[in-house]
Length: 452
Ligand SMILES: Nc1nc2c(ncn2[C@@H]2O[C@H](COP(=O)(O)OP(=O)(O)OP(=O)(O)O)[C@@H](O)[C@H]2O)c(=O)[nH]1
Ligand SMILES: [Mg+2]
Image (cartoon, rainbow, N blue to C red; front, side, top):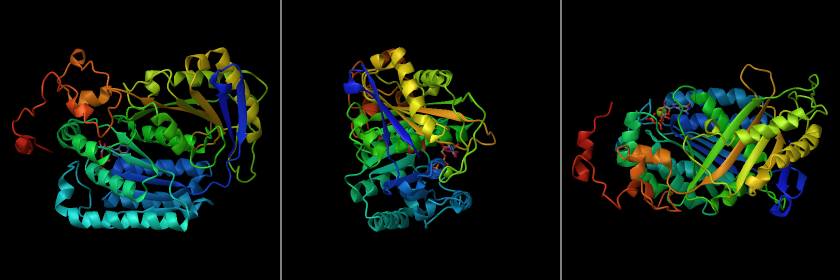
């Protein structure tokens, strides 16, 4: 792993400065949790990306919390293949639920677990105890806990696990990543029940929002995993302190966020200037594209960074960022480590010429070497990820929670804090009109909703 960091000098952006960072010898300081089937799959993709960066050793524990036998079997066979050939993954503690009341999960019903609540709670406590045990064995409190969550059968259980982990590691940066619902039944549950649960369970968290794509969700999961792994190995920290860069990035962005974070990703095929150069030196057992003297690649990196501002690059549509706030950009390139610094320098110059740092004075750009597996393709790709804070009303959430309200009736209040714990999105329109469930008293609403 090699990583380079670019920041406009003294934030006055007159001169660019690059710095090479040492990334070897990092402590295992991450915990990853996936709740539900989609969460477990996203966790798996993240492990795969970390393994491709030879950095899976940074993960202490990975928890695949899906009470579903198919998922558990799938994850186990995937991990046998992934970690079987990884020299770095032997230290990762992999955890599954040991109590699975229904072999196929909770069938999108976020309250179905209630019948089995007691044993589920004990099982979760047991999982948390094992996570604590592993962090003691590593002699390292986790610096960041990444939590992949959603709005289906495992949502409330995921929230409760979050609570338990929050209690176990009060100083740790927690990053819940929420996949917003896409189908009517799940949206209805979100409106009626889950959002309010999360207001309580995820109180005070900065949550990264992603949408659920209707068809190619595997592709989206990989985009997300690539971005997160890229941020985790990038070193944004000017002082060069060790630790989890992801945790550092979350802390920096949270100063400008109202409770939400957004991510944008761009993937571009790289133009190879010279013929491929095959390297087989450990840990660089993968092949890298050779980079020539030409300016073209630096310019295309610059264009790709600009493209992260376009709507299709956003992981959740309608989640918009602000210009002056801190933002972190990671560029992962399949080049030889020696080629990285000259390339980063000329890309940074190209960005400076296009006035990127003039428009975004608080944007950091980190470059790292990465040769990710791109399915069957052996073409080299660059991956650009931008993470940004979001303030105020979150449009895709309003669309789910208040579907009957036209955009022009939206509250003019510009609340800075709208994250979980503020109840803002539940009450966003109550100033004009109190939100009354159309079916009458609260207790009765369950009778009027039919679930398939
Ligand atoms: N992004 C993504 N979405 C998925 C994946 N698998 C299923 N989904 C979708 O995610 C939504 C929620 O389903 P699950 O993740 O199965 O929900 P769950 O929390 O496991 O809850 P139950 O299945 O009801 O126990 C559904 O709309 C699925 O279509 C996946 O691998 N990735
Ligand atoms: Mg499921």
